[in-house]
Amino acid sequence: MDTKELLKKVRKIEIKTKRLSNHIFSGEYHSSFKGRGMTFSEVRQYQYGDDIRNIDWNVTARYNEAHVKVFEEERELTMVLMVDISGSESFGSKNQFKKDIVTEIAATMAFSATQNNDKIGLILFSDTVELYIPPKKGRSHVLRIIRELIEFEPKSHKTDIAQALKFLSGTQKKKAIIFMISDFMSDSYEHTLKIASKKHDITGVRVYDIREEKIPNLGMVTMLDAETGKLQLVDTSSKTVRMNYEKHYQEKLNYFKDSFRKSGAGIVNTRVDENYVTKLLGYFKSR
Image (cartoon, rainbow, N blue to C red; front, side, top):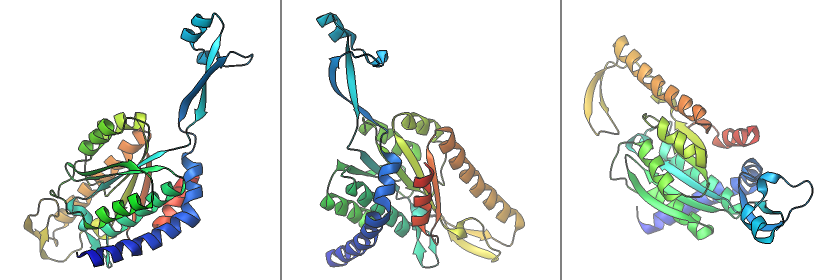
């Protein structure tokens, strides 16, 4: 993609997603996530009615008079977008690729955070972390994130959600709002998710295509595995083949739902041909 075409595409996504975040999401986003962090402000003398759990015993001993720590709500939040860029994200039907919707959702969330004067970071992952952009503020920073979402070419087409979560825990020391956007056709990440969820406010946004749920009966078909790059001949007229595929798909879906719920993380499911705005708004309001 040449620079002119890329800038045109970035601008198009900016216009659409910024409008959504300005008019719809910023208020809902703020009210949904505010107040989840308290930061130390000062130490003052103990007053009747203060919570004794906030007594600063070191200062109390020094002055021989009870003092308490005062905390205030953190005004500035940090959002980290964790985006799956593995091969399966290139799947699409009905003229809409999962990758396109993922980019729009990520851009919308980034502009919503910007409206709230929050920092935004980006992690692009496959079976390894392919790109990390540390959290910063500002429109130019968000535009850089959108550019990377559009044009970044992954080195691997496989997926490893656990590796991405380990990287998050290693780099993001303070509590952050995490939106992980993927189709979640992976497993073996429940333990890592539980650890990350103890520190961060995590939401899994599952983007999927209805054509992935079942294989239609089309006879002998050559299929490409987007994550391994292998071509194989599949007999879609076989009921067993179709049932095994559906079973595999359902197992991955159930693993996603169970893992996130057990970890206390949020879940949003949106199909590529559905209105993701409605899904996200519904999620924010239900929190």
